[in-house]
Image (cartoon, rainbow, N blue to C red; front, side, top):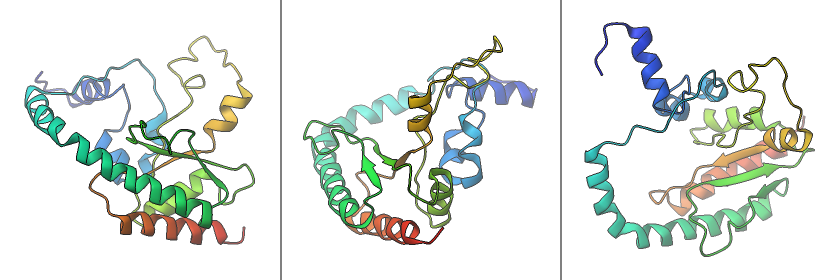
Length: 192
């Protein structure tokens, strides 16, 4: 699709990324866009995979067993260190199970943990740590609240305010996990 209208071009780019107003690159590289990217106003799709990407993906599948081993090592390092340095962070259930894909490493902050999840996210981003939010609440978003009535889901909302995803990638090292956990320990020890 080729357009002269930059507004329509941005809209189409947004629609191919679940209608998120901020593209994936900016969500991961610009700390101030993380929360802004969580508000949907229309229904979009995941439609950005090209033939070239599919061809590369087929080759990458051969590397999958080695990548899985690496992710398992990183997850085990996270689990061990977080128990020691960040008892207020609870890893997502199942992250210690061998069959888990480990494409995300989600943790929940205890309600009593300070700083808040959002403050912690911004502090981690300031320290070049690609933490993010993968699970956002859908029911209060403009797309789903068009009737003017917003449902309240207290358990979902409490959970949604406290979930954070720590970086995990087969390209990371154990030293990268040490770096993340060291900063988490420092940030969670700070007086509020």
